[in-house]
Amino acid sequence: MQICCLIISPAFNAAAIYLTLKHVAIAFGAEASRLRPKYYTWIFITFDLLALILQGTGGGLAATSHNNNNQLNLGDDLMITGIAWQVATLLAFGIMFGDYILRRRASGVPLSKVAVSTKNDRKFQIFMVAVTIAYLAILIRCVYRIAEMANGWRNPIMQSQGLFIGLDSS
Image (cartoon, rainbow, N blue to C red; front, side, top):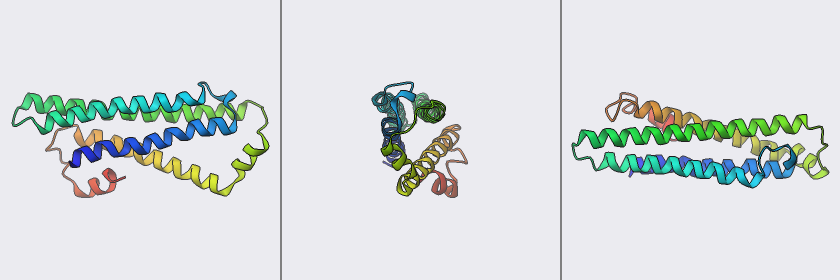
């Protein structure tokens, strides 16, 4: 149960973050986006779903291995692959978001009055800082999960309560 919750929880938070790029691109000008804004959500959530499937399949295999080391190792490998896929998805998202911001700034197209108002709104600025912190927390947590799972279930990193509380709870 613990592994299932640890696997699933970041995906929902990441999905909310992925939606942000779509709405930022719509609000500040889709012309600066490499993709149509609606595709950001579909692409990144699909990739995260694949990561969840890999992690869930691996977790299921590992949990039902009953001292079958081959099945346990396959489960571990699938979980690590799923987490690595999630990290790659998060990194790709970060690159796409950064690319959008750079292209928007370089476009020379003036922002609409509504976009200027949104950009200068303190609540929006706080929201974007919070989204960035959440993104970094999820990314760090996923990288930690790779290190945690790298040497199997007896990995000292996995057995460190301080690391678990500090990094796996984000």
